[in-house]
Image (cartoon, rainbow, N blue to C red; front, side, top):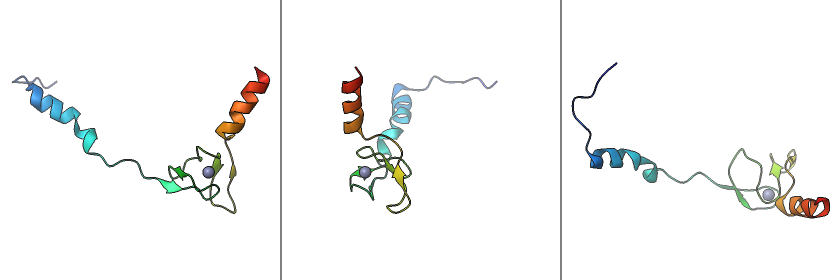
Length: 74
Ligand SMILES: [Zn+2]
């Protein structure tokens, strides 16, 4: 195993750990069902829709309905 010769400075260490700050934010696109902003290839947070407008379907219960179901159950 390789062994380091010199201790890395805190500036060097911290600048390495800060690389994620340079990253672009995740891409977002409009939901074909409700128009809300969502991450591509993921179910819509607002309505639970996945896929194109015609062939897609609701795969996750929307948050509003899920909250109502929880209120009725418990
Ligand atoms: Zn949606």
